[in-house]
Every structure is written in C-alpha cells, then in structure tokens.
Image 1: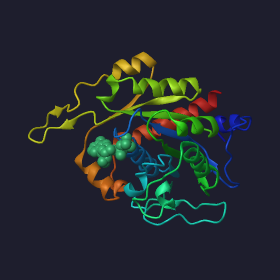
Image 2 (image 1 turned 120 degrees about the vertical axis):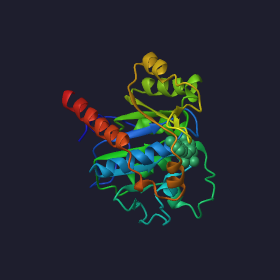
Image 3 (image 1 turned 135 degrees about the horizontal axis):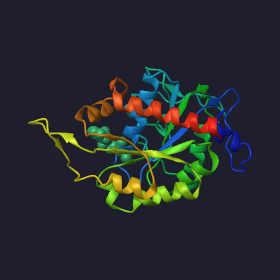
Length: 271
Ligand code: ADP
C-alpha cells in the first residue's frame, strides 16, 4: 500500500474504495484549460502503462466533457448493482470508468451542479469494482474548480502530471493549477508539453505551430520536471476519433510511464 493511502486513513474527508480494491498508484492528469490534449495524454499514459506490463486503469473525472470512452471504443453502458459499478475493460485489459457509460446517449449533457459532479467522481473511486490496479490515471476536468478540489481532498493521489501546450504557457492558468496543487500538498510529478512541434509535411524539419516553447522558463520557475514533449501527430487524432488509441505505441510515453512509477516507488521507499 502506498504511503499516500496510509496517510489517507487519517484524513476526515477520505473516500474509501470497496473491499477487494487495491490501487497501488494514483496519478491525476490536469491542465489549466481545455483543448490542450489532457484526455489524449491520459489515454496514452493508460494504454502505455498496460503495454509495458502494468495492470492499469483510467478514471474519467472530466464528467461534463468525457472523451475517454470514445478513445477506447467503449460503447456499452456500465453494469452493476445498487452500490457497485463494474468498470469497462478494453481490449488490452485496461479498466475504465467514464460518465458516458452512465448516460443515456453519448450526446446527453450532464446537467448537474458542481458539488454533484464532484460527488459522482468520488463514487467512481469508492463504488467501482477496480480490483488490483498497479497504476490508475485520472482525467481531470480543466482548471481549478470543484472536482480538483474534491479529488485533492479526498482521494489518495500520489501526484499530478500537468499537460500544457506551448501557447498555453504564456498565460497564468497553468500557474494557477500549480499553485492549487502546492497549496493542497499534492506532489507535482512533472509537465508533459503536448503539441510541442510537428514534422513539416514536405521535408523532415520540425515546425512549431504554436511558437517557441517557454516550458523551460515555467519548469525553472516552479522547479518542475519536464517529463516529455509530444508532437502533433495526425494519426493520434484519427486513432482517438476511431476508438483505436490502444493501437498506438509511443516509446517515449512508455518510458515516461516506467519512470513515473519508478520515481513514486522511490519516494515510498524513502518515506
Ligand atoms: P483536452 O482533454 O485537454 O480538452 P483533448 O485530449 O480532448 O483535449 O484534445 C483535443 C483535440 O486535440 C482532440 O481532438 C485530440 O484528438 C486532439 N489532439 C490532442 N493531442 C494531439 C496530438 N499530440 N496530436 C494530434 N492531435 C491531438
């Protein structure tokens, strides 16, 4: 059991999972604003974790804009009993829960107020029969609202990964996400810059559609680790639209997952 989960025993706000559930590591994926590829990165991290041999799971906490289901071609509704929900299991064995699995149709809007959404996310942790999970990734809604607040207060997170784009870094919203995590004592495991660059379609040069990255500046200012820089890859858009994200294998992301888990285990050993 991770130290974070040990600590959670003494937290009055703590959410507790069902008997028989053991989630060894929990990493939330956050961003300052929408559209930067946070869900894409969560999907890639989850399937990379599965590819390198971990029992992995994704909890889609982006309740009003859930996109994980489509990425993994999950079309079935969630099954369960009164107080139990069974997660979907993808082709590679990844376990997933997403608000889409509870909605009538994919285009049904979630017309709930913030606190209800936040308690639904808590239930995705407490009422789902996750079983034994080596690493779970949470796709968080963008920004610093009710859901991050509830998740940071009540789930035994090991840390967060921040997703940014080069354009995103010039604004203050990333700084707000960093400050929120710091204030709530949630470790920031590092930053992944998405849509960093793309290959020129005519030659092999790298082009920077969002301008020069200022990632080093931000990382330096807050003493954050740069985990990876992910290019714009048209095959990623297609795969996520077609529910085939698991077919994508990106060496860098696989290595990043292994490093994230290794670093967490090191922290556990030293504490
Ligand atoms: P967010 O979760 O931050 O709102 P998404 O993950 O939904 O953002 O990504 C927004 C859109 O950009 C989606 O259509 C997604 O397929 C696409 N996208 C994200 N990252 C990449 C990438 N590296 N290459 C190509 N398309 C991407």
